[in-house]
Length: 175
Image (tube, rainbow, N blue to C red; front, side):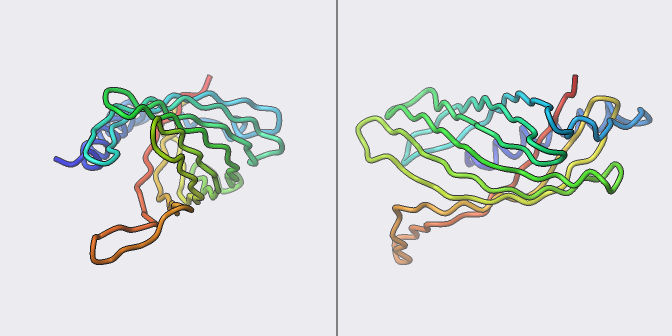
């Protein structure tokens, strides 16, 4: 099983648990996305760099500078293999909250990967998806992320690609 498939399976399991917990519960409120609100997050998954496989922890914070508009700063700490990797990722996301329990979002981000003993990597990206209420204080989200590696050169015959599409699945516990 590839690391990407394993990550998707873990995320789908978490989403499934959230859906079961949310059946029949009251919806979360769009007030979570109001100006002045702060968000903290912690993501996890697996990934690979070259032939090495890693466990990834992803802490993050966000601040809503106006209703629906969030400035965010995320990090990724890649553990369990060499070389060591650390990623910083500032971004912006806008969530449309006026549509009721289904809330589409769009955003952009920049990633800078610090890689021990190897040239650092810079990536630009965009995300598009939808969030929805599962229960009081529980929101799920799903969408797609596009990433483009700025220092990459495509080599089709070696299957080297500079851009990629990735799934995005999440659960948010609001308090």
